[in-house]
Image (cartoon, rainbow, N blue to C red):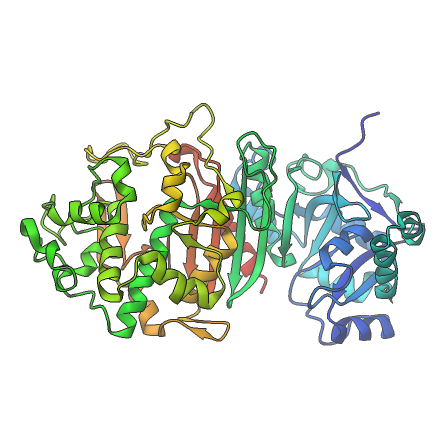
Length: 572
């Protein structure tokens, strides 16, 4: 008989089942002492329970993660547990399970519980080839869990520490003897829980192994990443920061097309045009210091730029893609020569009257803004970013990657059915024809591209480093005691410069100063799928990076991850 890929294993008897949670001592110790959750325990937010002891150890780091130092075994009624299962909905939208996203969202809003499947763990907390259950409780289910279903609460932190001590000492047999006796739980059939109206849900979910950490409220985010990996993506990472702190920092898949090198915690990848947000931040920082005036002519800082009728081009035109210089028409090799690239652009005439239209400056914007930064500071944009932004924040993001980091780079993988000659193109079919030099995947994977500073398209980082930097913008210019710019300086990013049809992209776009504006949020995405989104009202930054390209018309991965982040935000 084939082993099921989804299993509920638990410690249970005829009337009760044991589930695990971890809390800070001020919550966990009173709960264990009194046998019930204290008044400080929040009944108005989602809480996640896990029947698997070892999965709980993976989640809480054997009771040593901050805020999870007290591990509780909570004995609850089986009637309550099964009621939650039968009224649960899957924690994230899954194509083929739900009729559509809107139907799933309606189910999720109504459901008092959520089902999530994650890889079970062995004694070394390595992923096993099957998944165990997490059950998220909200609303009515949380109240009933605390007031009706809970029979007993025990502090099993000493047990967690004892098991870990044996594992660390290499005595796995002794560790195994201490484990709770978990056995297959006779849960309702898959058709009876996980997505009540579909009749399919609970056991049809992803099997991609996701590493890292996340707040239980944001479980839909790693699920969305796992779904993209299950659909064939090579690898990627996702980070969500709220109030400057990570609530999601996860990764999975592989760093190479052959799928032999696992994507690790410190794997980095070319994020393509997400790099533009880093260059924009440098310019906003200089503007906030009074060193750069967005309304000044570019020629004030870069006199040679006035050639060919560009004396009226303003700095804000560069940042908003309205300068009339969208195309890179030189050879690819010249992109690696800063002086040659900027000299070429300084000599060019604009394609339209600057400020009157927008056309995405996919490669040229970085050189244009970057040269202004260099003229003001005497440092290349990569050097300025490293010293003034990445360094103070401790961000692992680079413009101009040195050889010491090469071993961490995940090469870009072209879309299925394409090869290294796959070229960048506008996502919409009604864009104006361009004479720009095409950029191929193989160009971006070359060492010369890595070493060069192409501040619109050659930044390297992971989701954690991207979200960390852009959290400065989400949090009003200050992060973890480091203030880079004022709140007013951050607000400049959202000052609308253009709204309408972008001549190059062939679709409506609203441009601020260096960022695309999307209602109350702003940010930008890169060729192949990487993305960063900033929501100042929520003080949230969401970043997704991947080495797996998809054709633009078929790529909603970034949007799905952002929507998943908002699901978690609603529970805070």
